[in-house]
Every structure is written in structure tokens, then in C-alpha cells.
Length: 434
View 1 (spheres, rainbow, N blue to C red):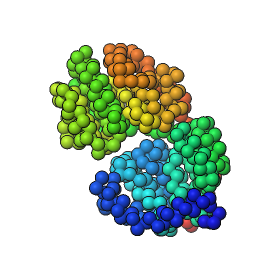
View 2 (cartoon, rainbow, N blue to C red):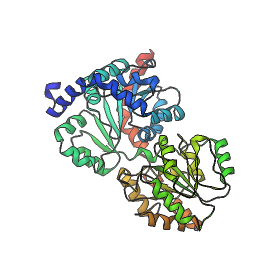
View 3 (cartoon, rainbow, N blue to C red):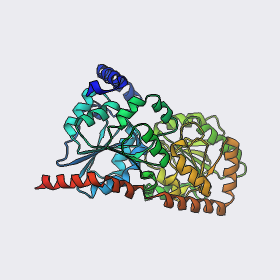
View 4 (cartoon, helix red, strand yellow):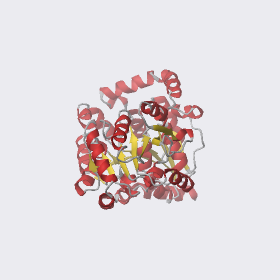
């Protein structure tokens, strides 16, 4: 197999094999940064920490939280086939989400580092019957070794960003080999489908974005009641999934509006909760009292900014929000998913950088289901307008809900496309049970 690969992939395989002894240094640094689970670092070298379930096994891989949550409903439907699920991801935060949001019979493991030795150990133990890769996390050794073992591979909810596409075109032989290893590519949009086809994917079908079909995030009723009591009837602006450079803008918007809305509470939910204390320190220079949820603090009457640096609680704050600003969009990160906020009745504002969800935001903006702002000043003006205009907020929510409803259906289309593989698994399951 190796001799048939492009030079880039042959070099990658040799270098990644040679670098395997250095992974101890990488793991040590990541442990210090809180990016690894000390009790499970063996999984990064392909060593399992749980037993393999018997019978056919569907392996689903998503890079992090967004990808894992995108396939939540798909996993639920696959579980009804009585086929066991192995779900892999690469981040501590995604592992925590799996533990909180998924049934106990969904086995989670950290994806091994992309060294041939570690990948081989992983595949030898788990022996998946079908592999579903979510969106665009394409690790060469993982893909090539799976193909060599004749594991059927499907790319689901496939996305090729406008930044990645030209980069991959410059490495056409490499990406063509990787994408050509997938038997099927289920793309989020027609544009994604065209890009995947141009890069060498074999059988490409546009099925839509699974994130549009994901259920609204849950909320602990006791915690919701507690927060509602603490926040009373204050207007609440939630800045969701923010990134470095955005929290300062949000604080400035709060400062610009505080005199008009003295009861205003701004809730900042960092995309990475471990940044909570860093965000709080950044906001110490403001004249507003800052409270930190990870320190078990609740917003008091004098609290101006509440940093909600905990895992899996966005459902709480979307339910409490007067309006939501979606982070990752004032900087060139590409934006975050607005669907959950819309499903929970929150009107959405966002910045100009939303290429990760370009089709979704384009449809929302065209229908008046979300509003784009281009600067701190525009954000402050729009927030101020919405805080005084409930009828406009309601119209935005209604329009956004209609768009989400219209663009849904990716789950059913994806299952239909996967049916030949699922039929084979049902046959294998019957033979195993017999």
C-alpha cells in the first residue's frame, strides 16, 4: 500500500512513526495545560480502557464538542438497531459532554495519536464494522490504516471550509488519496459537495447539516429555577461560545448600555470553559462586578457580568436570555452554531466571520431570523434596540425557527444514504446472535 501513496503521505507515515517516542513529551505538556485526562492517556496510544462490546460495532469519530453533538440524534437512531457504538474524539471537553449527554452504552475513547503503531493497536482491538467520520477531521494514518483493513468508511455531515479548500487543492494528490478512501461522502451543502468532488471524493451526496436536526440542549430544572431567582427580571444578554478578543468587546458593549439599562446582566460563556478565570481577570479592569460560575457564584444585584465557565450549561442560559450574541464571529474563527439558541427561543446576533456555518447564517439573515453586526458600535446599537423592542425580538425568533424547520431533514437523508451499510450490519447482527 505504502508504495502506491503520494510522496507526501509516504513521508508523513515515516515521520509520524519516527515521532512516536516523542509523544510522552507531548502528553506531558498537554496534561499541564489540562488538555488530557491523566487516567486515560493510554487511549492516546491505542490502549483501550474498556472492553469491546460483542457483535458489530459502528465507530463514529468527531474532533471535538461541535462534531460530537452534531451526531447526537444520529447516534440515538443507530442505537435502535441494536448495534453498539464506539464514539471517539480528541478533547477533554468533548469527553465530558459524552459522559453527560449520551447513554452509558455508547462507548467513548480518545482517538489515538496519528502514529501507525498507535492506530494499528486501536483498530486491532476495536475491529469496527463501519466507520463514520464527522465533518472534516482527516487524520492520514487513521484513514489509510482503516482502508487497508477494509473498514467501510463514510464521511458524514461533511464540511469543506473556504479556507481549507484552496489549501487542499495545492495538495491535490494527498487529499484525493484520503477522500478516495471513503466509500461515501455526505455533504452539508451543495457547495461542500462540489468542493469534495473537486478534491477527489468518490460518491458525494448532499444530505444537509445534521446540526439543524439536533435537539435543543437540556437544562437542569433546579439550576434553572435557581438562576431565574438570582437574575429576577433583569434583561440578559448572553454572549455564547466566545473566543479570545471577543470578551473585551462584549464588556465594552455592556459598559455602553449600562446607563440606559441599569439592571442589565451580561453573561459570557467562553467556548473553552477553562478560560473562565482568564476571562474574569481580563474584565477586572472594568467598573462592573464580575462573578464566576465555576466558583459556585450566582449573579447578585450588583453583578454586571457573569462568566459562565462550566460545561454543558448553554441550555440554561439560552432559556434565560433576552437575546444571544454568537461568538467566534467577531474574530476570524468562523462562527459558532446558532441553531440551539434559536430552538430555545432566543433572537440571535452575530459578527461577520461565520464561514463555518455560512449557508445557515445566509438563510437566517435573508429571512430576518438573525442579524449580522460588523463592529462593536453596531453590536451595542443593535443590542440596545432589541432590549427595548420585544415585538422585533419575537419576529426574529419566529423567522429563525421557520428557517431551521425548512432546512432540517439531514438526519433522515443521512440514514437513507447509510441504509445499505446498516442493512449489512443487521445481517451481521443476526448471524452473531444465532
